[in-house]
Image (cartoon, rainbow, N blue to C red; front, top):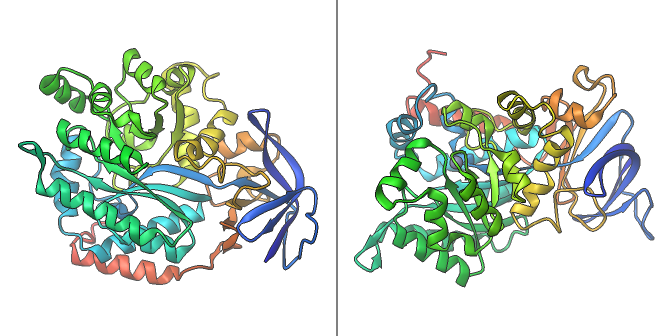
Length: 437
Ligand SMILES: [Zn+2]
C-alpha cells in the first residue's frame, strides 16, 4: 500500500537539529520511501492532504507503566514511599491480568491521541501489554518488572519465577515486529545486589538491554548509603547493570560522580518531570547530564504518578521547569526538548535506525497536527509551538509502522467505547469509583 502525505509542513532532521520544511512524504509498507521525491514505481493508494497541517516523528515515551491507568487520580498528594507502599502496591495486588490488558489499552489510546507512537513499559502481568500492543498497532519496548533477592547463593523463587515470566513473554512477542523486549529490574531497593548482578549477567548472555528505576527519591539514596555505603548509581554499576545497554528512569538525586559513571557507560537517562514533581522528588539535573554527554530522553511514568500520559504536557514541563528552577531561560531550548522527546528516546531504546525522525528508510511512525487551531496560530515558530503552546488535541492523524491507526481523530484499530466500558467495570470491582468525583 502506498500512502502520500501531500504538501505538508514537516519537522525534518538537519545537521544534528531539526528544521520545518514543506514537502511530501511517501510511504510504502512499513517505511518512508521518499521525502520530496516520489520513489520509482510508487503506487498511490491513499492521499493525506497536508494543507494547514504539520507532520512530526511520533513521540517516544521512554518510561511508563501502561497498565496503571486504572489508578489514575487515586493516590495523590502523598510522599513517594506512602504513595508506593501505602496505596499503589496494595491496589496492584488486587489486579487480575485482564485488568492490566484494559489498562494498557487505555494507555495506548491516550498516547496515540496525543501523538506518541512508541512507549517503553515496565509491567507485572505478562502477555497483557503485548496483547494490547499487537491489537492496537502501537509500538513498544516491554519489560516484566523484576523484584527478587538471593537465597544463599541462589536466586530466590520469587526472583526466578518473574525472570522466567519475562522470558515467556519474549517468546510470545516474537511474531510482532512492533514489539521489543528488555530485562526490567525494578530498582535497587527491590533487587538485592546478588539478584541484580544475576540479571545483569543474564542480560549480557541473552544480548538484552536493561530498563531500571534509579535514584528517584532521597529515601532511596539514604537506603543504599546506609545498607551498602554507595549511591544507587554506584550500586547498579557494581552489579554490572551498565555493562549492557541501559535505560535508567529518573536519576533525580545524582551527584557529579554519578553523572560521570552514567556518561562513561553510555547509560541513557529518562527524565519524568511531572512524576518527579508530583511525588516531591525534585528535578533531574539534565542539563548537567547532557553537558557530560549523557543521552537524555523523556517519559511520563505511569498514570498513577503523573497523572497523564500526554507527551505534549511532559515536553512543556521539560522545557520550562529547568529554566525556572535554575533561573536559566537559555537551557533546554524548544529544539533540544523536541529531540529529547523523539530521536533521543529512539537512541535510548536502540531503535534510532528505525524510528525517532522523519527520514527515508525509517519506519513511518508519524503524527499529523492540525495547525488551524488556536494553540498553533500564528505559525511564527512551529517547534516552539510544539513545546510551549500545543496540548495534544491538535493531533489529528497517526501512522505507526506505515499503518494509519488514527484518522481525523478517530482511532481505526480498536473500539474506544469498549475500553471505557471495561475500565469502568474494573474501577467498580476495585471500589475506586466511590462517586466522590
Ligand atoms: Zn516508573
